[in-house]
Image 1 (tube, rainbow over the protein chains, first blue to last red):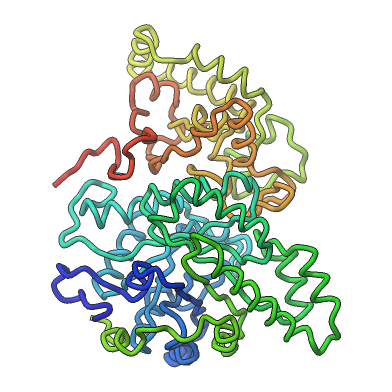
Image 2 (cartoon, chains in turn brown, yellow; image 1 turned 180 degrees about the vertical axis):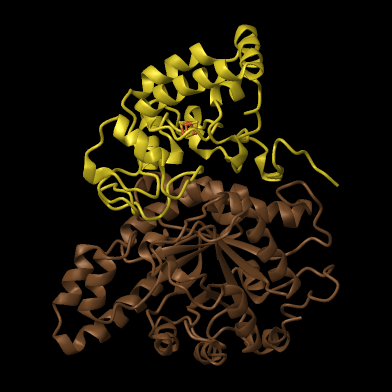
Length: 328
Length: 190
Ligand code: SF4
Protein backbone atom coordinates (compact mmCIF):
# COMPACT_ATOMS: atom_id res chain seq x y z
CA UNK A 1 0.00 0.00 0.00
CA UNK A 2 2.85 2.41 0.56
CA UNK A 3 4.78 3.90 -2.33
CA UNK A 4 2.49 2.28 -4.84
CA UNK A 5 2.04 4.53 -7.76
CA UNK A 6 5.13 3.88 -9.78
CA UNK A 7 3.16 1.96 -12.37
CA UNK A 8 0.58 4.16 -14.04
CA UNK A 9 1.14 7.37 -12.16
CA UNK A 10 -2.61 7.84 -11.66
CA UNK A 11 -2.83 6.50 -8.13
CA UNK A 12 -1.69 9.11 -5.63
CA UNK A 13 1.21 7.90 -3.56
CA UNK A 14 -0.07 7.42 -0.09
CA UNK A 15 3.05 7.27 1.96
CA UNK A 16 2.94 6.40 5.63
CA UNK A 17 4.19 9.88 6.52
CA UNK A 18 1.21 11.42 4.74
CA UNK A 19 -1.15 9.02 6.48
CA UNK A 20 0.47 9.56 9.85
CA UNK A 21 0.21 13.34 9.53
CA UNK A 22 -3.41 13.05 8.41
CA UNK A 23 -4.23 10.81 11.37
CA UNK A 24 -3.11 13.52 13.79
CA UNK A 25 -0.91 11.23 15.87
CA UNK A 26 2.61 12.27 16.90
CA UNK A 27 4.88 11.39 13.96
CA UNK A 28 8.55 10.51 14.10
CA UNK A 29 11.12 11.08 11.38
CA UNK A 30 14.87 10.59 11.46
CA UNK A 31 17.80 11.07 9.18
CA UNK A 32 19.90 8.77 7.04
CA UNK A 33 23.13 10.33 5.85
CA UNK A 34 24.35 8.55 2.70
CA UNK A 35 27.92 7.20 2.61
CA UNK A 36 30.89 8.72 0.82
CA UNK A 37 31.99 5.38 -0.56
CA UNK A 38 30.22 3.13 -3.06
CA UNK A 39 28.94 0.79 -0.37
CA UNK A 40 25.54 -0.65 -1.29
CA UNK A 41 24.94 -1.88 2.28
CA UNK A 42 25.59 1.38 4.13
CA UNK A 43 22.04 2.74 3.80
CA UNK A 44 20.45 -0.61 4.68
CA UNK A 45 22.52 -0.76 7.87
CA UNK A 46 21.17 2.58 9.04
CA UNK A 47 17.66 1.71 7.88
CA UNK A 48 17.79 -1.48 9.98
CA UNK A 49 18.25 0.61 13.12
CA UNK A 50 15.26 2.80 12.30
CA UNK A 51 12.74 0.40 10.79
CA UNK A 52 9.57 0.29 12.83
CA UNK A 53 10.56 3.31 14.91
CA UNK A 54 10.09 6.09 12.38
CA UNK A 55 7.34 7.03 9.95
CA UNK A 56 9.93 8.14 7.43
CA UNK A 57 13.61 8.99 7.26
CA UNK A 58 15.18 11.93 5.46
CA UNK A 59 17.93 11.03 3.04
CA UNK A 60 20.19 14.05 2.95
CA UNK A 61 21.45 15.74 -0.22
CA UNK A 62 25.22 16.11 0.04
CA UNK A 63 24.74 17.45 3.54
CA UNK A 64 26.84 20.43 4.61
CA UNK A 65 28.05 20.61 1.01
CA UNK A 66 30.12 17.43 1.40
CA UNK A 67 30.04 14.93 -1.47
CA UNK A 68 28.04 11.79 -0.73
CA UNK A 69 25.92 9.22 -2.51
CA UNK A 70 22.97 11.13 -4.02
CA UNK A 71 19.78 11.51 -2.03
CA UNK A 72 17.90 10.00 -4.97
CA UNK A 73 19.90 6.74 -4.94
CA UNK A 74 19.89 6.78 -1.14
CA UNK A 75 16.10 7.12 -1.08
CA UNK A 76 15.68 4.10 -3.37
CA UNK A 77 18.02 2.06 -1.16
CA UNK A 78 16.10 3.12 1.96
CA UNK A 79 12.83 2.09 0.30
CA UNK A 80 14.32 -1.30 -0.54
CA UNK A 81 15.36 -1.64 3.08
CA UNK A 82 11.79 -1.00 4.21
CA UNK A 83 12.10 2.57 5.49
CA UNK A 84 10.02 5.22 3.78
CA UNK A 85 12.33 7.97 2.49
CA UNK A 86 11.99 11.74 2.51
CA UNK A 87 14.22 12.73 -0.38
CA UNK A 88 16.02 15.99 0.34
CA UNK A 89 16.84 18.21 -2.60
CA UNK A 90 18.77 21.46 -2.45
CA UNK A 91 19.21 24.40 -4.83
CA UNK A 92 22.94 24.52 -4.19
CA UNK A 93 24.10 22.15 -6.91
CA UNK A 94 21.37 22.19 -9.56
CA UNK A 95 19.68 24.70 -11.77
CA UNK A 96 15.93 24.62 -12.44
CA UNK A 97 16.31 22.08 -15.23
CA UNK A 98 18.16 19.54 -13.09
CA UNK A 99 15.89 20.14 -10.08
CA UNK A 100 12.70 19.47 -12.01
CA UNK A 101 14.28 16.46 -13.69
CA UNK A 102 15.25 14.95 -10.33
CA UNK A 103 11.76 15.65 -8.99
CA UNK A 104 10.16 13.80 -11.91
CA UNK A 105 12.60 10.92 -11.43
CA UNK A 106 11.69 10.69 -7.75
CA UNK A 107 7.98 10.58 -8.53
CA UNK A 108 8.41 8.02 -11.28
CA UNK A 109 10.25 5.61 -9.02
CA UNK A 110 7.69 6.01 -6.25
CA UNK A 111 9.51 8.16 -3.72
CA UNK A 112 6.55 9.49 -1.74
CA UNK A 113 8.07 12.47 0.14
CA UNK A 114 10.38 15.29 -0.87
CA UNK A 115 12.01 17.91 1.34
CA UNK A 116 13.03 21.02 -0.56
CA UNK A 117 15.56 23.51 0.69
CA UNK A 118 18.05 26.11 -0.43
CA UNK A 119 21.02 24.23 0.97
CA UNK A 120 24.28 25.07 2.70
CA UNK A 121 26.76 27.25 0.88
CA UNK A 122 29.70 25.32 -0.68
CA UNK A 123 31.96 27.49 1.44
CA UNK A 124 31.34 25.07 4.34
CA UNK A 125 31.88 21.90 2.37
CA UNK A 126 34.70 19.74 1.11
CA UNK A 127 34.73 21.64 -2.21
CA UNK A 128 34.75 25.32 -1.20
CA UNK A 129 36.07 26.04 -4.71
CA UNK A 130 32.83 24.80 -6.30
CA UNK A 131 30.38 27.01 -8.17
CA UNK A 132 27.33 27.67 -6.05
CA UNK A 133 24.32 27.36 -8.33
CA UNK A 134 21.36 28.89 -6.40
CA UNK A 135 19.47 29.40 -9.66
CA UNK A 136 16.20 29.45 -7.70
CA UNK A 137 15.70 29.55 -3.92
CA UNK A 138 14.13 27.05 -1.54
CA UNK A 139 10.74 28.79 -1.47
CA UNK A 140 10.65 28.90 -5.26
CA UNK A 141 11.57 25.21 -5.38
CA UNK A 142 8.62 24.36 -3.11
CA UNK A 143 6.39 26.45 -5.35
CA UNK A 144 7.80 24.75 -8.45
CA UNK A 145 7.05 21.30 -7.01
CA UNK A 146 3.52 22.32 -6.05
CA UNK A 147 2.92 23.66 -9.57
CA UNK A 148 4.26 20.44 -11.11
CA UNK A 149 1.98 18.36 -8.94
CA UNK A 150 -1.23 20.40 -8.71
CA UNK A 151 -1.21 22.24 -12.03
CA UNK A 152 0.74 19.59 -13.91
CA UNK A 153 3.13 22.18 -15.28
CA UNK A 154 6.85 22.85 -15.31
CA UNK A 155 8.29 26.28 -14.57
CA UNK A 156 8.32 26.83 -18.33
CA UNK A 157 4.60 26.18 -18.48
CA UNK A 158 5.05 22.86 -20.28
CA UNK A 159 2.85 19.98 -19.24
CA UNK A 160 4.00 17.23 -16.90
CA UNK A 161 1.81 14.27 -17.71
CA UNK A 162 1.08 12.29 -15.64
CA UNK A 163 1.72 14.75 -12.85
CA UNK A 164 3.86 13.70 -9.88
CA UNK A 165 2.31 13.32 -6.43
CA UNK A 166 4.75 13.56 -3.59
CA UNK A 167 4.15 15.02 -0.17
CA UNK A 168 6.05 18.32 -0.16
CA UNK A 169 8.14 19.31 2.84
CA UNK A 170 10.41 22.15 3.81
CA UNK A 171 12.52 23.35 6.74
CA UNK A 172 12.43 26.33 9.07
CA UNK A 173 14.74 27.61 11.78
CA UNK A 174 12.74 29.25 14.60
CA UNK A 175 15.97 30.28 16.36
CA UNK A 176 17.63 32.37 13.70
CA UNK A 177 17.09 36.15 13.47
CA UNK A 178 14.73 37.79 12.73
CA UNK A 179 13.03 35.49 15.24
CA UNK A 180 9.72 37.36 15.19
CA UNK A 181 9.56 36.83 11.43
CA UNK A 182 10.20 33.06 11.36
CA UNK A 183 6.58 31.91 11.60
CA UNK A 184 5.62 34.26 8.80
CA UNK A 185 8.46 32.89 6.77
CA UNK A 186 7.07 29.40 7.28
CA UNK A 187 3.63 30.73 6.30
CA UNK A 188 5.17 31.86 3.06
CA UNK A 189 6.51 28.38 2.38
CA UNK A 190 3.12 26.92 3.21
CA UNK A 191 1.54 29.36 0.75
CA UNK A 192 4.08 28.11 -1.81
CA UNK A 193 2.96 24.53 -1.19
CA UNK A 194 4.75 23.01 1.82
CA UNK A 195 2.65 20.39 3.64
CA UNK A 196 5.12 19.60 6.37
CA UNK A 197 8.13 21.38 7.83
CA UNK A 198 11.00 20.07 9.89
CA UNK A 199 12.70 22.53 12.21
CA UNK A 200 16.25 23.11 13.31
CA UNK A 201 17.21 21.45 16.65
CA UNK A 202 14.92 22.54 19.44
CA UNK A 203 17.05 23.08 22.55
CA UNK A 204 15.45 26.34 23.64
CA UNK A 205 11.82 25.54 24.36
CA UNK A 206 10.91 29.11 25.31
CA UNK A 207 11.76 30.45 21.87
CA UNK A 208 10.14 27.42 20.26
CA UNK A 209 6.88 27.86 22.17
CA UNK A 210 6.72 31.48 21.06
CA UNK A 211 7.31 30.34 17.49
CA UNK A 212 4.52 27.77 17.76
CA UNK A 213 2.15 30.34 19.16
CA UNK A 214 2.86 32.56 16.12
CA UNK A 215 2.34 29.49 13.92
CA UNK A 216 -1.05 28.83 15.51
CA UNK A 217 -2.04 32.50 15.23
CA UNK A 218 -1.32 32.34 11.50
CA UNK A 219 -3.29 29.09 11.31
CA UNK A 220 -0.54 27.31 9.39
CA UNK A 221 -0.46 24.32 11.74
CA UNK A 222 -3.82 23.34 10.26
CA UNK A 223 -2.39 22.77 6.77
CA UNK A 224 1.26 22.09 7.54
CA UNK A 225 2.65 19.45 9.90
CA UNK A 226 5.34 21.09 12.01
CA UNK A 227 7.89 18.44 12.98
CA UNK A 228 10.35 19.64 15.62
CA UNK A 229 14.02 18.78 15.30
CA UNK A 230 15.61 17.04 18.31
CA UNK A 231 18.80 15.15 19.08
CA UNK A 232 21.00 13.94 21.92
CA UNK A 233 24.16 15.92 22.66
CA UNK A 234 26.41 13.18 23.97
CA UNK A 235 29.71 14.93 24.75
CA UNK A 236 31.04 18.35 25.65
CA UNK A 237 32.97 18.33 22.39
CA UNK A 238 29.74 17.82 20.46
CA UNK A 239 28.17 20.61 22.51
CA UNK A 240 31.05 22.92 21.69
CA UNK A 241 30.83 21.98 18.02
CA UNK A 242 27.12 22.50 17.52
CA UNK A 243 26.95 25.70 19.52
CA UNK A 244 29.87 27.38 17.78
CA UNK A 245 30.56 25.69 14.45
CA UNK A 246 27.13 24.90 12.99
CA UNK A 247 25.26 27.94 11.68
CA UNK A 248 21.76 28.38 13.03
CA UNK A 249 21.79 26.17 16.14
CA UNK A 250 20.95 27.86 19.40
CA UNK A 251 21.85 26.13 22.69
CA UNK A 252 20.51 27.96 25.77
CA UNK A 253 22.85 28.62 28.69
CA UNK A 254 20.77 26.50 31.07
CA UNK A 255 21.39 23.43 28.92
CA UNK A 256 25.11 24.17 28.63
CA UNK A 257 25.32 24.50 32.44
CA UNK A 258 23.42 21.25 32.89
CA UNK A 259 25.76 19.30 30.60
CA UNK A 260 28.88 20.89 32.08
CA UNK A 261 27.61 20.24 35.59
CA UNK A 262 27.77 16.46 35.46
CA UNK A 263 30.91 14.26 35.71
CA UNK A 264 32.55 13.55 32.34
CA UNK A 265 31.34 9.95 32.23
CA UNK A 266 27.74 11.07 32.76
CA UNK A 267 27.53 13.65 29.94
CA UNK A 268 26.21 11.15 27.39
CA UNK A 269 23.41 10.00 29.73
CA UNK A 270 22.51 13.56 30.64
CA UNK A 271 22.37 14.49 26.95
CA UNK A 272 20.03 11.56 26.32
CA UNK A 273 17.88 12.59 29.27
CA UNK A 274 17.62 16.19 28.00
CA UNK A 275 16.57 14.91 24.59
CA UNK A 276 13.91 12.68 26.16
CA UNK A 277 12.56 15.58 28.22
CA UNK A 278 12.42 17.85 25.17
CA UNK A 279 10.41 15.27 23.20
CA UNK A 280 8.02 14.90 26.13
CA UNK A 281 7.52 18.67 26.24
CA UNK A 282 7.00 18.76 22.47
CA UNK A 283 4.19 16.22 22.63
CA UNK A 284 2.32 18.70 24.82
CA UNK A 285 2.71 21.77 22.60
CA UNK A 286 -0.38 22.35 20.51
CA UNK A 287 0.30 22.34 16.79
CA UNK A 288 3.47 20.23 16.95
CA UNK A 289 2.94 17.30 14.58
CA UNK A 290 5.94 15.23 15.61
CA UNK A 291 9.66 14.98 16.22
CA UNK A 292 12.52 14.76 13.75
CA UNK A 293 15.37 12.95 15.49
CA UNK A 294 18.87 13.79 14.27
CA UNK A 295 21.20 11.59 16.23
CA UNK A 296 24.70 12.73 15.14
CA UNK A 297 25.73 9.21 14.15
CA UNK A 298 24.12 7.64 17.25
CA UNK A 299 21.20 6.13 15.30
CA UNK A 300 21.26 3.01 17.46
CA UNK A 301 20.20 5.15 20.40
CA UNK A 302 17.03 6.39 18.72
CA UNK A 303 14.73 3.55 19.85
CA UNK A 304 15.79 4.07 23.46
CA UNK A 305 15.18 7.82 23.26
CA UNK A 306 11.73 7.32 21.76
CA UNK A 307 10.81 4.58 24.22
CA UNK A 308 11.82 6.67 27.21
CA UNK A 309 9.95 9.70 25.84
CA UNK A 310 6.84 7.57 25.63
CA UNK A 311 6.59 7.81 21.87
CA UNK A 312 7.36 4.20 21.17
CA UNK A 313 7.14 2.08 18.04
CA UNK A 314 5.15 3.26 15.06
CA UNK A 315 1.54 1.97 15.27
CA UNK A 316 0.57 0.70 11.82
CA UNK A 317 4.07 -0.40 11.04
CA UNK A 318 3.33 -3.96 10.05
CA UNK A 319 0.62 -2.97 7.59
CA UNK A 320 2.50 -0.11 6.05
CA UNK A 321 5.73 -1.99 5.60
CA UNK A 322 4.42 -4.39 2.98
CA UNK A 323 4.53 -2.19 -0.06
CA UNK A 324 7.48 -0.01 0.77
CA UNK A 325 10.15 -2.40 -0.36
CA UNK A 326 9.82 -1.75 -4.04
CA UNK A 327 11.27 0.95 -6.16
CA UNK A 328 8.94 0.68 -9.14
CA UNK B 1 32.98 40.00 -10.43
CA UNK B 2 30.33 42.67 -10.09
CA UNK B 3 30.35 42.33 -6.31
CA UNK B 4 33.99 43.11 -6.06
CA UNK B 5 33.72 46.02 -8.41
CA UNK B 6 30.84 47.54 -6.49
CA UNK B 7 32.45 47.03 -3.16
CA UNK B 8 35.57 48.70 -4.44
CA UNK B 9 33.48 51.60 -5.60
CA UNK B 10 31.72 52.04 -2.29
CA UNK B 11 35.00 51.70 -0.48
CA UNK B 12 34.31 48.57 1.57
CA UNK B 13 37.15 47.59 3.83
CA UNK B 14 39.42 44.97 2.21
CA UNK B 15 38.55 42.29 4.77
CA UNK B 16 34.91 42.66 3.73
CA UNK B 17 35.59 41.60 0.16
CA UNK B 18 34.90 38.01 -0.64
CA UNK B 19 35.81 37.34 -4.23
CA UNK B 20 33.72 34.67 -5.85
CA UNK B 21 30.37 35.11 -4.22
CA UNK B 22 28.12 38.05 -3.43
CA UNK B 23 28.45 39.88 -0.11
CA UNK B 24 25.51 41.47 1.71
CA UNK B 25 25.37 45.24 1.48
CA UNK B 26 23.50 47.45 3.93
CA UNK B 27 22.06 50.32 1.87
CA UNK B 28 23.60 53.72 2.44
CA UNK B 29 20.27 55.58 2.11
CA UNK B 30 17.44 55.31 4.64
CA UNK B 31 14.30 53.35 3.83
CA UNK B 32 11.80 56.24 4.29
CA UNK B 33 13.72 58.34 1.76
CA UNK B 34 13.74 55.48 -0.72
CA UNK B 35 10.04 54.67 -0.34
CA UNK B 36 9.39 58.35 -1.08
CA UNK B 37 11.81 58.44 -4.00
CA UNK B 38 10.05 55.48 -5.52
CA UNK B 39 7.19 57.71 -6.63
CA UNK B 40 9.67 59.50 -8.87
CA UNK B 41 10.32 56.24 -10.69
CA UNK B 42 6.75 55.01 -11.05
CA UNK B 43 5.90 54.28 -14.69
CA UNK B 44 4.17 57.05 -16.62
CA UNK B 45 3.73 57.71 -20.36
CA UNK B 46 6.92 59.78 -20.53
CA UNK B 47 9.03 57.08 -18.90
CA UNK B 48 7.45 54.45 -21.09
CA UNK B 49 8.36 56.39 -24.21
CA UNK B 50 11.87 56.99 -22.84
CA UNK B 51 12.30 53.26 -22.18
CA UNK B 52 11.13 52.36 -25.67
CA UNK B 53 13.44 54.97 -27.17
CA UNK B 54 16.40 53.70 -25.12
CA UNK B 55 15.83 50.19 -26.38
CA UNK B 56 16.04 51.46 -29.95
CA UNK B 57 19.26 53.39 -29.28
CA UNK B 58 22.02 51.09 -28.00
CA UNK B 59 24.52 53.81 -27.15
CA UNK B 60 22.04 55.86 -25.12
CA UNK B 61 20.83 52.64 -23.49
CA UNK B 62 24.38 51.73 -22.51
CA UNK B 63 24.92 55.14 -20.94
CA UNK B 64 21.59 55.00 -19.14
CA UNK B 65 22.30 51.47 -17.86
CA UNK B 66 25.78 52.51 -16.70
CA UNK B 67 24.22 55.40 -14.77
CA UNK B 68 21.75 53.04 -13.10
CA UNK B 69 24.58 50.67 -12.24
CA UNK B 70 26.62 53.50 -10.76
CA UNK B 71 23.81 54.95 -8.64
CA UNK B 72 22.35 51.67 -7.40
CA UNK B 73 25.79 50.13 -7.03
CA UNK B 74 26.79 52.90 -4.67
CA UNK B 75 23.59 52.79 -2.62
CA UNK B 76 22.62 49.11 -2.60
CA UNK B 77 25.58 47.17 -3.98
CA UNK B 78 23.27 46.48 -6.95
CA UNK B 79 24.53 43.63 -9.12
CA UNK B 80 22.30 44.50 -12.12
CA UNK B 81 20.06 41.47 -12.18
CA UNK B 82 17.73 43.57 -14.32
CA UNK B 83 14.54 42.71 -12.40
CA UNK B 84 14.61 44.82 -9.32
CA UNK B 85 13.08 43.52 -6.09
CA UNK B 86 13.97 46.57 -3.98
CA UNK B 87 10.42 47.98 -3.57
CA UNK B 88 9.37 44.73 -1.88
CA UNK B 89 12.48 44.17 0.23
CA UNK B 90 12.74 47.31 2.36
CA UNK B 91 15.16 48.59 -0.28
CA UNK B 92 17.90 46.10 0.59
CA UNK B 93 19.19 44.21 -2.45
CA UNK B 94 18.56 40.43 -2.20
CA UNK B 95 21.08 39.71 -4.94
CA UNK B 96 23.86 40.66 -2.52
CA UNK B 97 22.89 37.54 -0.54
CA UNK B 98 25.51 34.84 -1.25
CA UNK B 99 22.68 32.34 -1.77
CA UNK B 100 20.74 34.72 -4.02
CA UNK B 101 17.62 34.28 -1.90
CA UNK B 102 14.69 36.30 -3.23
CA UNK B 103 12.20 35.13 -0.58
CA UNK B 104 13.67 35.95 2.80
CA UNK B 105 16.55 34.96 5.08
CA UNK B 106 18.02 31.46 5.27
CA UNK B 107 18.23 29.58 8.56
CA UNK B 108 21.90 30.33 9.10
CA UNK B 109 21.72 33.94 10.29
CA UNK B 110 23.91 34.13 13.42
CA UNK B 111 22.41 35.15 16.78
CA UNK B 112 24.03 38.55 16.32
CA UNK B 113 22.49 38.90 12.86
CA UNK B 114 25.55 38.14 10.79
CA UNK B 115 25.57 36.41 7.39
CA UNK B 116 26.35 32.72 7.60
CA UNK B 117 28.65 32.83 4.58
CA UNK B 118 30.35 36.18 5.28
CA UNK B 119 30.27 36.40 9.09
CA UNK B 120 31.76 39.88 9.14
CA UNK B 121 28.70 41.52 7.53
CA UNK B 122 25.04 41.70 8.55
CA UNK B 123 22.56 39.45 6.76
CA UNK B 124 20.97 41.52 4.00
CA UNK B 125 17.58 39.91 4.68
CA UNK B 126 17.74 40.87 8.33
CA UNK B 127 18.49 44.41 7.20
CA UNK B 128 15.55 44.17 4.76
CA UNK B 129 13.25 42.96 7.55
CA UNK B 130 14.26 45.74 9.94
CA UNK B 131 13.84 48.42 7.28
CA UNK B 132 10.48 47.08 6.10
CA UNK B 133 9.20 46.63 9.65
CA UNK B 134 10.15 50.16 10.67
CA UNK B 135 8.11 51.48 7.73
CA UNK B 136 5.11 49.23 8.34
CA UNK B 137 5.90 47.30 5.16
CA UNK B 138 6.71 43.90 6.62
CA UNK B 139 3.85 42.28 4.68
CA UNK B 140 5.87 42.93 1.52
CA UNK B 141 8.19 40.16 2.66
CA UNK B 142 5.31 37.68 2.50
CA UNK B 143 4.93 38.17 -1.23
CA UNK B 144 6.05 35.15 -3.20
CA UNK B 145 8.87 36.13 -5.51
CA UNK B 146 9.12 34.20 -8.76
CA UNK B 147 12.48 32.91 -10.03
CA UNK B 148 14.49 35.51 -11.88
CA UNK B 149 15.15 35.46 -15.62
CA UNK B 150 18.89 35.05 -15.96
CA UNK B 151 18.82 36.57 -19.43
CA UNK B 152 18.21 39.97 -17.85
CA UNK B 153 21.55 40.32 -16.04
CA UNK B 154 23.29 43.54 -17.00
CA UNK B 155 20.16 45.17 -18.41
CA UNK B 156 18.55 48.25 -16.91
CA UNK B 157 15.88 47.27 -14.41
CA UNK B 158 14.35 50.73 -14.76
CA UNK B 159 13.80 50.19 -18.48
CA UNK B 160 12.35 46.75 -17.76
CA UNK B 161 10.11 48.25 -15.07
CA UNK B 162 8.81 51.02 -17.32
CA UNK B 163 8.24 48.52 -20.09
CA UNK B 164 5.98 46.56 -17.75
CA UNK B 165 8.20 43.45 -17.73
CA UNK B 166 8.24 43.27 -13.93
CA UNK B 167 4.55 42.61 -13.68
CA UNK B 168 4.00 39.24 -12.08
CA UNK B 169 7.52 39.16 -10.66
CA UNK B 170 5.87 38.62 -7.31
CA UNK B 171 2.34 37.59 -6.46
CA UNK B 172 -0.23 39.65 -4.67
CA UNK B 173 -0.91 38.50 -1.14
CA UNK B 174 -4.41 37.16 -1.77
CA UNK B 175 -5.37 34.00 -3.51
CA UNK B 176 -1.80 33.04 -4.20
CA UNK B 177 -2.32 29.50 -2.99
CA UNK B 178 -3.59 28.45 -6.35
CA UNK B 179 -1.24 30.51 -8.48
CA UNK B 180 1.24 28.48 -10.49
CA UNK B 181 4.86 29.59 -10.51
CA UNK B 182 5.05 29.35 -14.31
CA UNK B 183 7.38 31.99 -15.70
CA UNK B 184 5.71 35.31 -16.36
CA UNK B 185 7.27 35.80 -19.77
CA UNK B 186 6.37 32.41 -21.18
CA UNK B 187 2.72 31.75 -20.41
CA UNK B 188 1.68 28.13 -20.49
CA UNK B 189 2.98 26.32 -23.49
CA UNK B 190 1.07 23.10 -24.00
S1 SF4 C 1 18.36 45.37 -9.98
FE1 SF4 C 1 18.64 43.37 -8.99
S2 SF4 C 1 20.76 43.43 -8.29
FE2 SF4 C 1 20.14 45.60 -8.65
S3 SF4 C 1 19.35 46.37 -6.68
FE3 SF4 C 1 17.59 45.56 -7.83
S4 SF4 C 1 17.42 43.40 -7.08
FE4 SF4 C 1 19.47 44.12 -6.53
